[in-house]
Length: 282
Ligand code: SF4
Image (cartoon, rainbow, N blue to C red; front, side):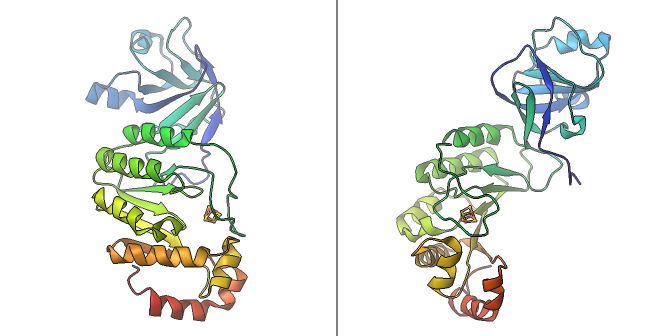
């Protein structure tokens, strides 16, 4: 539905500097729910001078999609959006100095928590090659986001990089997701190597989240094929141990196969390997 709509737009933001995460609310929703606080950004298609009082309420910001803006307001006012269609009611946005980023889009079926850009693999076909940097702040951002995402979202992805690199941080995030979005299925993309430690799998199970699908890739029927793709010696063994440990506790596993040329050339062997050795994957 939103194919092609960017996840950020340039904008002018008056009376603001720094960074701020807000949930977008439209006039209809404000009227029906009465919600008005500094965690919300009121979205108006244009400015009507009769609405000045409304704009002076305790909003985190006000976004005006087209036309002029009121003067002398203390609330941050977002205007002159390069792509006004980028922001819709229900979305979660982050304001930066001259930019608005969209972290959650109500109309999308593919929302996710982006936990880190770091990874312990270096896959040859990675669409987002890992970076060496300290991006621990992303966990904090994900926690904030969990509080603002619609409660009835059916599925939420968790991805990176490798989301389990910060083991305790990842456990805390799952715990928070269970509390904030109790009926939402989590679809977690991981290389599975962290689960070679059975104790870590046990810790996850103890959280009692009933709706997790683990999306784990396998790149070959031999260690050589898999490790060639990940560029990490021993990664096949770790991922296989992880898969068995998850299988042992009855976790729901989605096995992911990327069709590189070497994998296509060995697809029959890989299929047979999966059928014989991983019959518990769903
Ligand atoms: S495991 Fe995923 S994020 Fe890490 S390098 Fe491979 S494809 Fe990229």
